[in-house]
Amino acid sequence: MKKILLTLSAVALTASFGASAKLLKLAHAMPLDHPVNQSLTWFAKEVTKKTDLRVKVYPNATLGSEQSSLQMLQNGTLAFAKVGGGLTASFSQEYNVLSLPYLYKSEADSKRILRGPVGQGILASSEKDGFIGLAFLSSGSRGFYSNHKIEKASDIKGLKIRVQNSPIDIDTMKALQGSPVPISSTEVYSALQQGVVDGAENNIPTYFANRHYEVAKYYTEDHHTMIPDILAVSTEVWNGLSNKDQTTIREITQELLKVQDKYWDAYVDKARDEIIKNGGEIVKADIPSFQDKVKPVYEKFEKQNPDLKELLHSIQAY
Image (cartoon, rainbow, N blue to C red):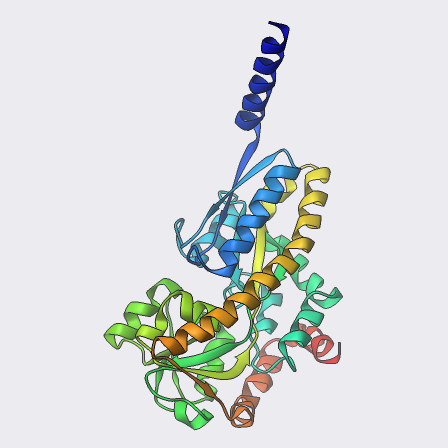
């Protein structure tokens, strides 16, 4: 009888913990099989296991677009969100520098810089804007895709290309003599299908996961940007957590970087194989032709953003 009472007490305590643990929502726009969803599901489970919090993941833009997610972070109705670095530039000044084309020598170089002191400074800078960056998540390099084969910069001339709603993305497209069309990521498939745009740009996993290869056959590896994804937390929610929970979440976030890299690299290999198997074509680009065309983007950036010149130069020199 005593053993039964002890068991019932344990069950009651577990139920009480589950009911009292604070629920935090984590939103992102990627589908279920995308590496972002895999890594953020891991993050949610770890936070739930190691703190007095419960984190629930809402994938596939269930709670709205990435822009809506950032707005919900700002007003505290959402705890965490994965958002693209290009979009955050519309909400917090320092993130603008991340969208500059050909900013890094390689993907390894981008990780070295963004996961070091320079990157940490950028992540912390948006606390005043209603959200704090916890980590820059690997999101590879971005390429153009279209039913028009793009091998050199001049091939973009006159094409309507979907870009993120970022001034630098728009300026980059104009420098390449394309027509920038800033629409939500959730609208890209239908926009390509209906001819609203001639092409788009993103990384290979997103091109594959969203089945964009069905409506845009050629994917060009021009590596024009390496804009990271950002795991962000609401400033309001963060300041309401205990110091212990904040420290634990920071520690889990550091582990998340390795988890994300593992899932990402495996998914890139799978995506490349499946794209080709399904009739898509991965095109090698004449990268110097693109680099030459986008030089005016840097000139305009430094002229319009004198406060960010030091940050830009620190990235280039790091």
